[in-house]
Amino acid sequence: MRMFWSLLLVVGITGVASCNQDTKTTVTPSGRGARGETCEARNDCGGGLACVNGTCSKNDFDISVSAKHCDRVQCEDDKDCCGDRPREAPSKCNNRTSVCLTPLLPDCSSVACETDSACGSGECPTGVCSLGGACNTNEDCEPDVCDTGTSSCTITGYYCTSDSACLGASTCGTRVCDCTNPEYDYNDPICSDPDCDDVCTLRCDNELCVADTSCEEDLDCAGSVNDICEDGRCVECVENDDCSDSEEECVNNFCEKPCSTNEECPLFHACDDGECVERGCGSDTECVLAASRAGNGAVEDPRLYRCLDAGGDSDMRICKLPCENDAGCASFEVCDDGYCVFIGCKTNEECRAYLGIENEETNDAKPYITQAVCRD
Image (cartoon, rainbow, N blue to C red; front, top):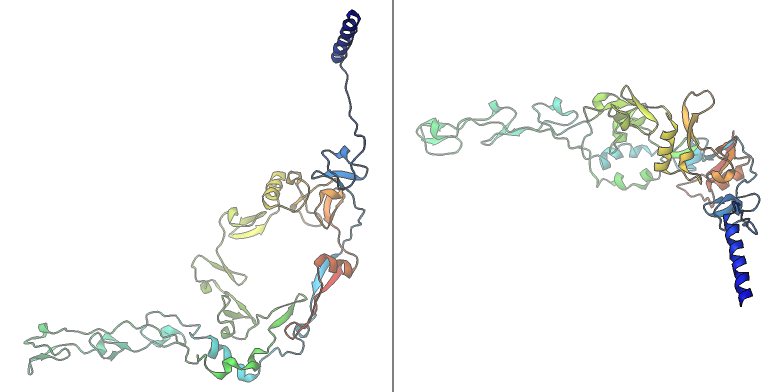
């Protein structure tokens, strides 16, 4: 028993001595994680892998970058958008918009008037005297006075001995412009004529088939906010007086209120002489805060964004996301020269995959096929 306690004492002293020694211990994992396995740090993963969002993932994808980009192409000219359908309705349909869709005259407002000239193409209707009878002015209204021969008022018929017992002068009621379109009749057969409906309303604009907003007169634009025909297209305004709000100005055929502060403009724009103009970023912090608020789809932390030169001939600065490897970039991007860039394309088929163009079909209303094109 005495020998047992002696050995225990020796072991205890040895343990204390070991704890007092200033040594460092490095724990090396017995095996590094494979792709898809969980991790906490980079060295938890095997070669060629990085710890991304707690999972061992490939960090470089060996994808070459191309300067080409992908475009959607639907047409070369208007014919491609319409096929066999006519782009113009027969002449019998020329007045259809006015007859079927325009109950009120577009250049007329329901305001007080005295003559037709105040009503555009509308009319200033005949008024009614307060004591009865049609009128255009107060002078057209007969006064209610006492007929001493019959001892009764001339209009109301009240018993009287003097004019004071009668209603006196009559006034012509307020006249308001009548803006009713005399052509409007939604029951007219032309409103349901199929020849007027089977018309292609598409046109080719920048290789895409879009709604045709062309016009010949203001009536062609009726029913839309853009109700003015200017140079063959429907626009909201041509001059400042076309805007309903006195504070708005006509800018590029749109009614807009001039800005007075940068806060009225999109991010990375500034208010310059009443107009929002692009200025780019001003600091790294501005990029970080904008990316944190909007989200960007990248794996890396938004705090890595930097405000750097846009490149080329521009002296503007833009927000860029630095990267160490491809895993730090969003989908369809790789890390190139320290920054995330779109991988581009080399073939049309690559663009078809990128744009998701599949199962395209044609019909009478859509005779075109959307194609994917890889271009410089």
